[in-house]
Amino acid sequence: MAVLRLRDAVAYILHRMGCTHPFRLSRVLALAELRAMERGLGRLTDARYVAGPGAFYIEGVKEAIEGDECFVKHEGDPATGRKGCIEYRCEPPAGVPAEAKTFLDEAMEEARRLDDMELNRRVVEHPLFKKLAEEQ
Image: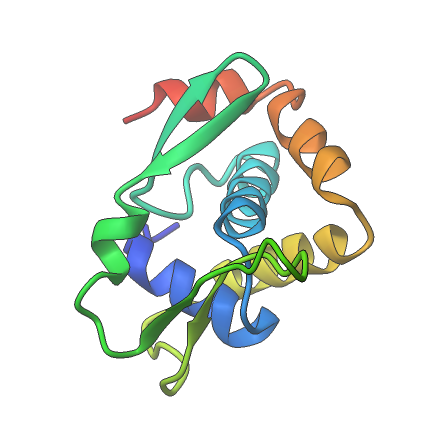
């Protein structure tokens, strides 16, 4: 499978999901990667996953969106309980192959049914997650 640039994968997810907190964004992307790996297709993106105890982050997301006018960061408001999010305001990225869209769409649909804790657990407890975090 062709490997997507991290920026294009993030843009596709945000275009489809709307303004999304970076935590959920990273879990959706990881879930799509894991589903592709389950089917023996390898990695979807060039993202670098850095694992810690019970959690992870994706290196380069901030750099991929900073200075790109298509991405708008919205700060959270502790007074109202509103979480911050990232919004994508441009046309959908053109370079996302249909096969990659399938995995990304499936991961978004699965994530919609899960709260943050369950979504994180689904990713970090996946049998292939360690391999995903080690492949750089």
